[in-house]
Image (cartoon, rainbow, N blue to C red; front, top):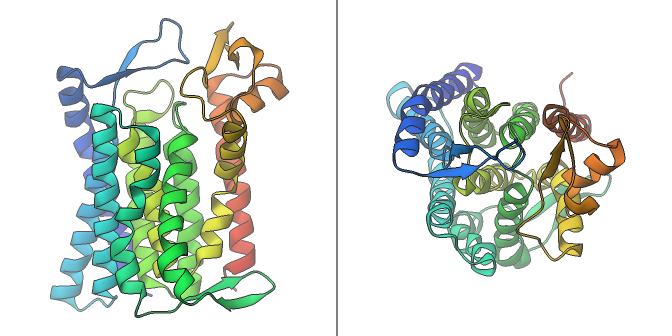
Amino acid sequence: MDLLMLFLVFASSLSITFFSLPFLIRKLAASGIVGKDVNKEGKPEVPEMGGLAVIMGVIGSLLFAIGLRTFFGYQFALVEMLAAMLTITIIALIGTFDDLFDMRKDVKTVLPMVASLPLVAVSAAGSTAISLPIIGLVDFGFLYIFLLIPLGVTVASNLTNMLAGFNGMEAGMGSVMFASALLVAISAGSVEMALLCASMLGALLAFLRYSWYPAKVFMGDIGTLAIGATLASAVIIGNMESVGAILVLPYLLDFAIKAYNRFPSTKWWGELREGKLYPVEGKVRGLAQAVMKISGGISEQKLVAFFIAAEAFFGLLAIVLYARLL
């Protein structure tokens, strides 16, 4: 594992995203591509689709990594990396279309399966076993290639897309997620997984600077879908699928609550009263509203901090179970 290469990829992703965002924010605002910050008084409009800068950072830094491989001899599996980049790009296109034209929910749910095809193609020649805690390696054969990979990309993308909508939540939780996965990848010697995690970590940390309360830009579906797709791509290529399953557990709990409420498209946010958020109409429609209700009202900053801390707990759990740091 060449830590210098990882640092260069991380730094390039952070730089691309950080320096492109101010320009992108101005362009989005001028073009009227904005969304309402529903958790603020007066629901001010904020530029949306800022996740485009995240995609630029991730893909740009991975292209830089390919340049390092070509001209300076750094080693990693090029075909697998290109497959992951193609999957992430397809997911970003799906998110872009949804942000601009409001795609039907059922279509948006299924389309990520198409994006998984590059990973299916490269995995057909690789391992079909998954490492499970305590149990060890379990070989799923063709089910892994034709069922688990498409489901993994689809589920991860949709989960990270659902638990969103509060200033700094997507980038904050995502940063912790990819930092944890990066440590596991380094300890396991999985260069490709580490590169994907480092690229997304850099982009999300840069984005967090602009999305933290009060947010200057929203990520949009282009970014939230790509977070899950990148995680799925990383753990599939790194053969660390169980790590990904642990890291999305908070998202899975949110999914369960929203599924019980038939996936509400409105009133999932908080009702602002005296600086604190409460469930709209007193009804819990998602995990964020459950936290609002249990806490008896909570500020948006503390709500987001709670979710980042929760993700840090599961990140630490993944590290303890899978990372060999000593």
